Length: 568
Image (tube, rainbow, N blue to C red; front, side, top):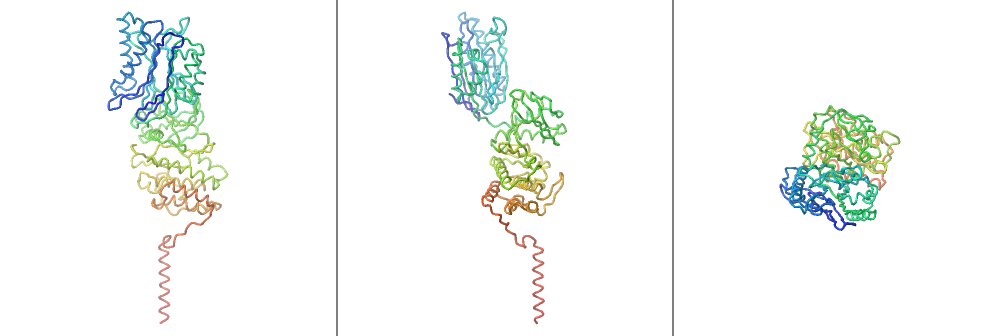
């Protein structure tokens, strides 16, 4: 088994090839990684070729095609891009093989099928001609990625219509597929897919632990099923993906149109829209089924009124960029759709079976102490995960917290986050929801860990009380932050230490809050474990009300002066 690396991309590859009952193996299989350096075309190449039987030079054609393609591909300038470079490389090999067949009678009819996958950054590029095949196994669903270039009917149904070397002008199939972690790809000759049904291929790919084991089992199964042709299989497992490129994301988002909002029942890019999840001022979220693989998703469509809003488009870039870099059981994911599939602007996320924290707060009973603290500590870990990556969420609130039926929690909606290397929103458009925004944000601060901690504190306060510590704040207002109302005034059943912990998190001055969200989480967990309903330390009158303090002091001094005068 081989491990291939390319700029953060890791692919593990295994392959197996057997002659079977044939005297000679005319299949050829190979894999390679590109050179490292500026200007070099990058990517990991995996290729399978099947020399055309019944003709001379079948083995030579297959080996020459695969080896020559790899050399020619990596020799192309990076500026061509993967798809054009691959096509140009295969066209040059086709011309050479066709010429050899013409001038050398010993190689007359020299030709081969060819299927290759090029794994580059976060995309698998496919180039294909003939009847070898490419498959993808994703979430135990098998998808055929190629079409057989054969006659398809009568006694000559398997007769090739296209192959490398048949004609001087080559017609190839090109495609690109967005990759996901743990995708498993298969390239195979007809000696494997001919004797085996798709159900058998799916089972063998699903059951094998490693790509090498999968390739060997596929070849063995094909020969045991009565296959009399050469049998070759190459299996590639996607182990790690590089982060998405921000500039590439921005270009894609800028080019996609914002169309009228779709409704349940419509089909968009092979997604069947089924049920509205939310309908807000800027976007509509709908549950959907991917008709290609049957998976459940939630699609977010922007409202046409923001079609020219650069900030809103920026939020789509932010969300995809962060989701590619932060992987955590507490953070919501983004599902990447193939660029060629998307005809309009939207984002896709997995369907999380559960409800938002906001929905939970709208129904009885109110959160008990342990349930609320459990939610608070997990949410704090979600925010801390982002902070460790240098990312500020900037819109922590109950609507953006998913409580899953299996007990999990996900912090979602990363569209307005602030992160290194990401272009930020303009100063007058600092994002957030007013009632959860820290006082410094209203003064133009861009947001930091302290403001996320404040929003977390307001979220927990509201989770227990259903209200806000400083009252609800209307959009576009300039609020005044007075003294927060204690949790105990609304929930006398809750302990005083909870009051103290939450009110410290929502302190008006950032320096009076906790040092970070994990310190806040520790205070909550520690309070539950202690089980002590201690009263918060009361501040002295001088700190609580300096004016009243000096008035009292003045009255005392005046009284002392009066008594001293009487004593004379």
